[in-house]
Length: 134
Length: 134
Image (cartoon, rainbow over all chains, first blue to last red):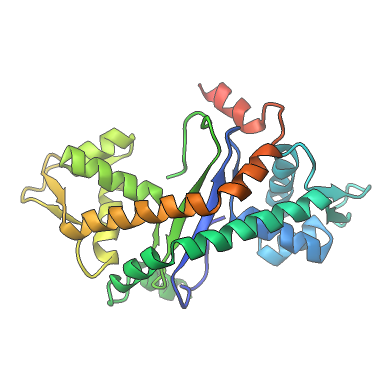
């Protein structure tokens, strides 16, 4: 779940939570939940993220075991077309993570700007890789 | 450069910076620089992190191209034993990143605590994986 695609127009910070039980939660899983809320299925959310259905299913299963309450409720039927929706806790999880992310971004704005201004003005290897890939 | 080893005693947040030129900077690269400052060589820093020398060298090279100023200065001699030290900018880079990390951790403390309290009290799959691996 690495960020992919072209470089951003601006430099940004991202947040990852490392829980004491060894589980991790970052923007990729949260984005998957947001797509799931819109698509109302795991397969739809996977498609929207360009992710294999099995990987999306495993990530949802991981999140459903991570907390005392489930994050996603799936409806009967085992096909990939079966429906799914966020639980109330799932919605709270997204809200808490996105709030933390905004607060973190605000808190690090000055340091991020200082490093942004120190960037090499020459095209980077990462940009060249993207250009080659595109 | 995933976090590895046993689960932490407490839940924590980590920060990753995504620069507009497509480059990324997170705790793994910063930790490598901190080891390099102590060990005064790339090979020593790699060893201290349990990382292959080639991987450490590539990460240092990446950081040296990422900014207008180099982060690490290497001394003549191409052997793996050749010396290396942080530049003044390298020291500033570490200080800015660690300051941002502390500020981010402070900013997200309440949200992290709320999610920590919602964790599943049962042993997680991640813990079982660690137990198997250990």
